[in-house]
Image: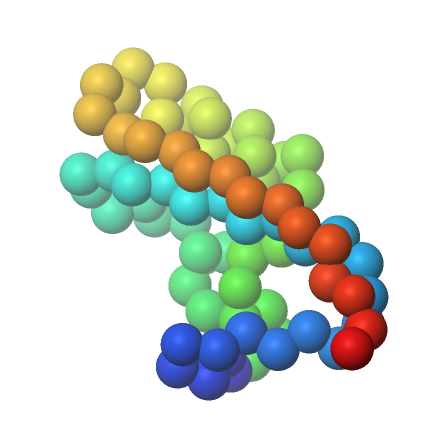
Length: 72
């Protein structure tokens, strides 16, 4: 699916990464990598499920990074 330590982009555009560190496993089927979706594709429903699930959780951290992919 994704080569170890490498992510390849096939076209220019904006890429966004969201990382969440929590002390327990989050049981969402869309978080499990598969051939069709090797990395989760975020939409409003998934973000809502995530925030509702983290509500009341005291010990978690979120990280966000965005960048433009350009042709070389």
